[in-house]
Amino acid sequence: MKFIVSIILCALTTYCSFLYSEYTPWWLFGAGAFLVGIALPQKGWLSWLAGFLAVFICWSILNAHFDNKSSTSFINQMAEVLKIGKSGTPLIFISAAFGGLIGGFAMLTGNLLRSRKSEV
Image: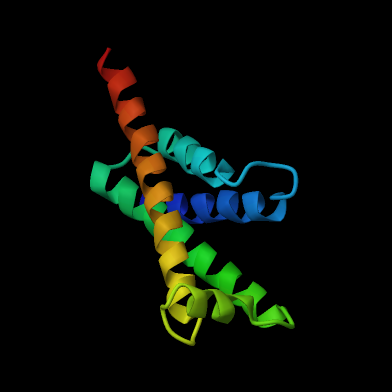
């Protein structure tokens, strides 16, 4: 149950950092994942997986939504520039994977910090 709750909370912090991205730094979702990792203790690999899945799913959906909403297919053009292909779909998943790694390691760091404090 903690696993699902941590995914939901991390996805909410990621979504909120996307909403306020004009006023906050891009890496704020990592701080949210870090705080969720401190608040909800779980095994290390589950903590990492929850952070990865939450950010990966949230970024994939948001990037696909913004790509469909824009009148120019910016992601398709970026995929051509980066020689990924003519479709921007792989680029959406590549960027979501990088965000997922940051979210996963941020949540794992928060979880390990919590376990470290309980040992002392």
